[in-house]
Image 1 (spheres, rainbow, N blue to C red):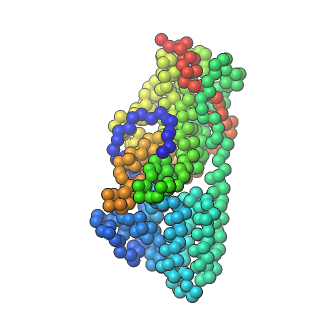
Image 2 (cartoon, rainbow, N blue to C red; image 1 turned 60 degrees about the vertical axis):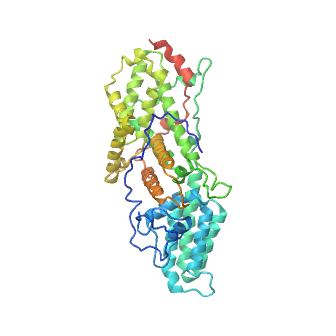
Length: 459
C-alpha cells in the first residue's frame, strides 16, 4: 500500500461521480466468443455485449482472446487489462492468451489452415497493438516479448505482412518504453522543504515575481509542468496504488508495486503548496507580501479558466497554510473578493460538488473543443485518487463465490480511462525554461521557518 503525503480536505464517502468515456467504452460490432460461461456466471444482466457483471478469471481471460470471427470490445480490453493485474501478472496473462490462441487456432499443427489464420491474424495483431500502446510497461520483461514473438511467429508463414506489422509494433513499443524511462530531471527535483536555522543564503532572496510577473504566463507554465508530469503516469498505477493481495492467489504478490510517477505527481502538488507559502512569507514588508498574494490569486483564477484544477487547488492550499493565513496585517491590504470566489469553487462541502460541476463543464468543453487550449482538463489529483480509493474499498474485488466483480472494474475503468484521455492532451503553451526551472528548484521553507517569518506580522 502506498502512502501519499498531501493536504486533502475531508471527502464524504460514497460512490464517486464519474463522466462517461465514449472513446474508451464504444461497444464493438462483433459478437461474443463462441464459448458458454460456466458456474452460473450469467446470474445478472450483462454490462457489455456478452460480458457478465461477474465471472471467473478463466472466463474473463477467454473473453479477451480473439478468434477468426470475434474481437473483444474496446471497453472490455481496457477494463480487463487494467484490473487483471490484481489477480494475475501481466506476463502470465499474456502467456495464457497466447496459449489459448495457439490451441484454438491449431497454430501448433504442421500444416495451418491459412484461410482461417488470415481471418484470425489481424485480430491478434490488433489486440497486441492495443495492449502495447495502453500498457507498455507490461512488456518490460524479455520473457513477455518472447511470448509475443512466439505467437506471431506461428502465423507469420501465412502472410509475410504479419512479420512486418509485429516489427513495427515492437519498434513503437521500444520507443514508448524509452520515452517513459527518460524522466526529465525536473521530475527528480527537490521536493522536501528546506529549513534554514541561520540567515538564508543570498540565493533564497530571488523571488518568483523577479522571474515572472505576469500571472497568465505563470498559469500557463504551471499547466505545462502538470501535463509533462501527467504523461508519465500509467493507468496501471491507479490499480497498483491501492492493491490488496488477492486471497485466491499464491503466497507471492501479483506484482511489484510501481507507482513512482503517481507519487512524484503528488509530491509536486505538495511542493507547489509550499512554494506559494514561501513566496508569500519571503518579503519583509506587508505591502510586498500583499502584492504576492494578489499575484497568486490572479494565477489561480487563470488556472481555473484554463482547466488546471490541480495547480488551482495547490495555490489555494498554500495560501491557506497557517503561516500565510495568520498574516492579518498583510491580508488587510488584499482585495480578497476574487480569492473567496476561487475558494468557493474548490469548497469541500457536499463532496466537492462545486468543483465537480466545474470539472464536468471542463470535460464537456474538452470533448467539443476546437483548439488545444480548450481540451485541457487537469483534475484535482488527490481527490481523483480518493475517489478511486473509496471505489476500491467500497466494493470487493471478488464475490463470495470467487468470481471477479467485473462491474466494479468497469466503474474503475471509466474514471481511469477519462484521466488517460486528459493526460494525452498536448500542451499548447510554449515552455519558458527559466520559469519551469524555478518552479522545480527554488528552495522552499519548512512549516517552522514560515511560521518564524510570519510572526512579525501576526496580530
